[in-house]
Length: 165
Image 1 (cartoon, rainbow, N blue to C red):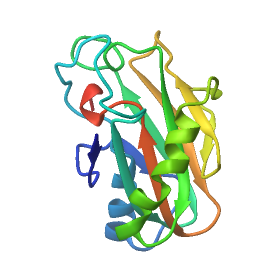
Image 2: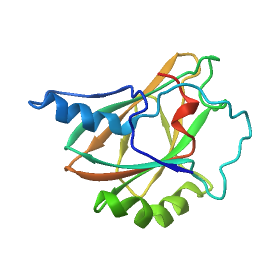
Image 3: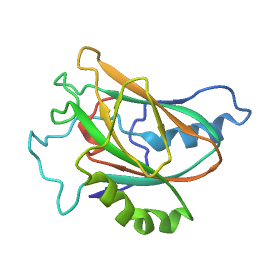
Image 4: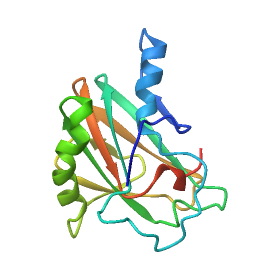
């Protein structure tokens, strides 16, 4: 499992306008799950838990576009039809990832998650989302909506490197 800062070639954009572009840019990097492909093949291991990547990010209230692109081989992930994601509202960034891990793992291990096709909305909730990639498109996007500013902890079933910018 990897807990990291999201400076991995993000394809995320903030919807609407903001008067502090650098500040907005840093917040948009939170959802960086669009980078160079990794060599993990089908059936790769998740280690000892249901998530491979997590990060905590402070966001302003608003809408963000989260885009996943097919990798150099022309597939999503390793290859994947979908990916499970949990977004939880957290406390201080230094503690949130560890503090929220038990709740995130419980949600990711549910037998069924809320199925969400591209174009859908992801919010900070006690919900596991199963993001279903549109296989006929080179990229699939969702809207991440946060009603109030604060820290969000994001846990994903796969590593960012499994997707291409």
